[in-house]
Image 1 (cartoon, rainbow, N blue to C red):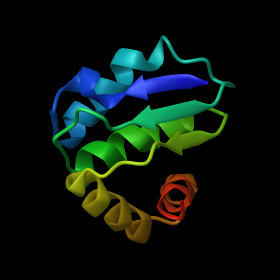
Image 2 (image 1 turned 30 degrees about the vertical axis):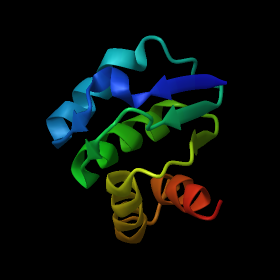
Image 3 (image 1 turned 45 degrees about the vertical axis):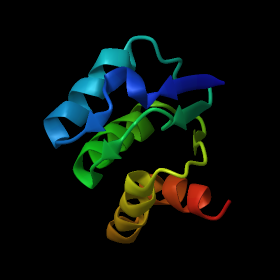
Image 4 (image 1 turned 120 degrees about the vertical axis):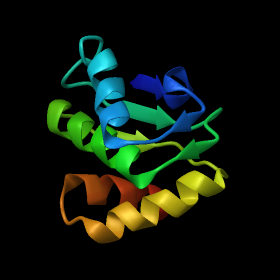
Length: 101
Protein backbone atom coordinates (compact mmCIF):
# COMPACT_ATOMS: atom_id res chain seq x y z
CA UNK A 1 0.00 0.00 0.00
CA UNK A 2 1.22 3.46 -0.90
CA UNK A 3 1.19 5.95 1.96
CA UNK A 4 0.65 9.66 1.30
CA UNK A 5 1.45 11.88 4.27
CA UNK A 6 -0.22 15.19 3.47
CA UNK A 7 2.04 17.09 5.87
CA UNK A 8 4.75 16.85 3.22
CA UNK A 9 2.78 19.57 1.38
CA UNK A 10 2.58 21.81 4.44
CA UNK A 11 0.57 22.23 7.61
CA UNK A 12 -1.99 24.56 6.05
CA UNK A 13 -3.47 23.21 2.82
CA UNK A 14 -5.59 25.75 0.97
CA UNK A 15 -6.67 26.54 -2.62
CA UNK A 16 -7.35 24.43 -5.68
CA UNK A 17 -4.09 25.40 -7.41
CA UNK A 18 -2.11 24.22 -4.37
CA UNK A 19 -4.07 20.93 -4.28
CA UNK A 20 -3.30 20.33 -7.95
CA UNK A 21 0.35 21.24 -7.39
CA UNK A 22 0.55 18.72 -4.52
CA UNK A 23 -0.96 15.97 -6.67
CA UNK A 24 1.38 16.76 -9.57
CA UNK A 25 4.38 16.67 -7.21
CA UNK A 26 3.72 13.04 -6.28
CA UNK A 27 2.10 11.71 -9.46
CA UNK A 28 5.33 10.29 -10.87
CA UNK A 29 5.92 8.28 -7.68
CA UNK A 30 2.46 6.66 -7.66
CA UNK A 31 1.84 3.09 -8.77
CA UNK A 32 -1.46 3.20 -10.66
CA UNK A 33 -2.80 -0.20 -9.56
CA UNK A 34 -1.58 -0.18 -5.95
CA UNK A 35 -3.92 0.91 -3.08
CA UNK A 36 -3.31 4.31 -1.51
CA UNK A 37 -3.69 5.44 2.08
CA UNK A 38 -3.89 9.15 2.90
CA UNK A 39 -2.66 10.32 6.30
CA UNK A 40 -3.63 13.73 7.72
CA UNK A 41 -1.26 13.59 10.71
CA UNK A 42 0.62 16.86 11.13
CA UNK A 43 -1.83 18.90 9.04
CA UNK A 44 -3.41 21.82 10.88
CA UNK A 45 -5.94 22.93 8.26
CA UNK A 46 -7.23 21.60 4.97
CA UNK A 47 -9.89 23.39 2.94
CA UNK A 48 -12.55 21.64 0.86
CA UNK A 49 -11.15 23.20 -2.31
CA UNK A 50 -7.60 21.91 -1.70
CA UNK A 51 -8.71 18.41 -0.78
CA UNK A 52 -11.29 18.23 -3.57
CA UNK A 53 -8.67 19.08 -6.18
CA UNK A 54 -6.09 16.72 -4.69
CA UNK A 55 -8.44 13.76 -4.18
CA UNK A 56 -10.23 14.16 -7.52
CA UNK A 57 -6.96 14.01 -9.42
CA UNK A 58 -5.71 11.12 -7.30
CA UNK A 59 -8.93 9.13 -7.81
CA UNK A 60 -8.78 9.74 -11.56
CA UNK A 61 -5.14 8.63 -11.70
CA UNK A 62 -5.00 5.63 -9.37
CA UNK A 63 -7.05 2.59 -10.37
CA UNK A 64 -6.94 1.00 -6.92
CA UNK A 65 -8.60 1.66 -3.59
CA UNK A 66 -7.97 4.91 -1.74
CA UNK A 67 -8.34 4.97 2.03
CA UNK A 68 -8.42 8.02 4.28
CA UNK A 69 -6.81 7.29 7.63
CA UNK A 70 -8.93 8.18 10.66
CA UNK A 71 -8.15 11.56 12.17
CA UNK A 72 -9.31 13.73 15.04
CA UNK A 73 -8.37 16.89 13.13
CA UNK A 74 -11.41 19.19 13.30
CA UNK A 75 -10.58 20.85 9.98
CA UNK A 76 -10.53 17.49 8.18
CA UNK A 77 -13.67 16.34 9.98
CA UNK A 78 -15.47 19.48 8.79
CA UNK A 79 -14.15 19.25 5.23
CA UNK A 80 -15.00 15.63 4.46
CA UNK A 81 -18.79 15.77 4.89
CA UNK A 82 -18.95 18.96 2.78
CA UNK A 83 -17.23 17.20 -0.11
CA UNK A 84 -19.21 13.98 0.27
CA UNK A 85 -22.47 15.93 0.15
CA UNK A 86 -21.43 18.01 -2.86
CA UNK A 87 -20.37 15.10 -5.04
CA UNK A 88 -21.85 11.89 -6.39
CA UNK A 89 -18.85 10.00 -7.75
CA UNK A 90 -15.81 7.97 -6.71
CA UNK A 91 -14.50 10.82 -4.58
CA UNK A 92 -17.75 10.87 -2.60
CA UNK A 93 -17.56 7.08 -2.17
CA UNK A 94 -14.00 7.31 -0.82
CA UNK A 95 -15.02 9.99 1.67
CA UNK A 96 -18.22 8.24 2.74
CA UNK A 97 -16.26 5.04 3.38
CA UNK A 98 -13.89 6.94 5.68
CA UNK A 99 -16.76 8.64 7.51
CA UNK A 100 -18.47 5.32 8.22
CA UNK A 101 -15.48 3.88 10.10
